[in-house]
Length: 380
Ligand SMILES: [Zn+2]
Ligand SMILES: [Zn+2]
Figure 1 (tube, rainbow, N blue to C red):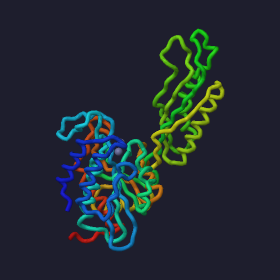
Figure 2 (cartoon, rainbow, N blue to C red):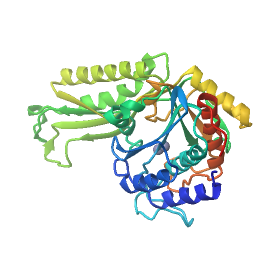
Figure 3 (cartoon, rainbow, N blue to C red):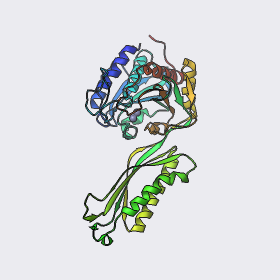
Figure 4 (tube, rainbow, N blue to C red):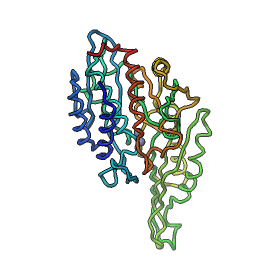
């Protein structure tokens, strides 16, 4: 049996002890002992970092269904006066991953009593979602290979949408995004003789104007957002010799992301060549789009219908990114949004806190999806 009071208590305890991406050891340790109490058939730890995978086998052959949540918190100083506020200065569960973990722990408690009838269910506690690295690391960890899923599902709470209502769509659920760093190198010179150096200033200014207009070349939605720029140093005697420009590229599909990245590089190369500058590129925070399959979408929609959870088919996907797309690239499945309330602090706000009322809803939707795909034995 799942005890909702217990899951809320666990959620608040996780909230009090957040850890940053890639450093989730204590959280993983806490989860490990809670999972062990649910007697999974296998428990894989240190997966792709601090990740954990609890495997619940069915009585006969059938599909592997993966349900995923995230272990990490954010480098944000929590503002709030509730009792369970973060005990770690400068670190907070401001994305609700504490809530997502509690929901999946509730599933583990269900599976302790009711094993799947066929196939198996694997519950993944994924590290490092916020920096876009965790899903890939888990997926490429050789110890994950035996558990590659046929179906994969995940949820994310979404402030600004009605509490406890489900939102998803077939196709792109959220965007691909990528951090681009452009370094332009020329030659410094005395500020009295700028003509003897090569300043990246005009090329930088040009790129700041042209890069954000690139998405107009695409019929699908895309965005280029400048996030940082630097030219030379604070030195009035020196004409600058180098510049850095950073932008976040975003698109609905992985195909457009690859074309958008190519065109951004071409633009920078052209601007650099014209000014006689060298140019180099680096990429960070690389997220694939999360693309829902039709079958995965149907499972979520029909599960909601079955248990009476309000369901909405979204006309378009969310603009934010999530690294769950790594799993749905290889498995049939879907990610869905669970409304966190029309008036609720946004994700990554310092006063955000996961609404505990979502725990039973998320749990019910996942439990129903599992029953539809793998069957659940009678409680006993
Ligand atoms: Zn987040
Ligand atoms: Zn998140």
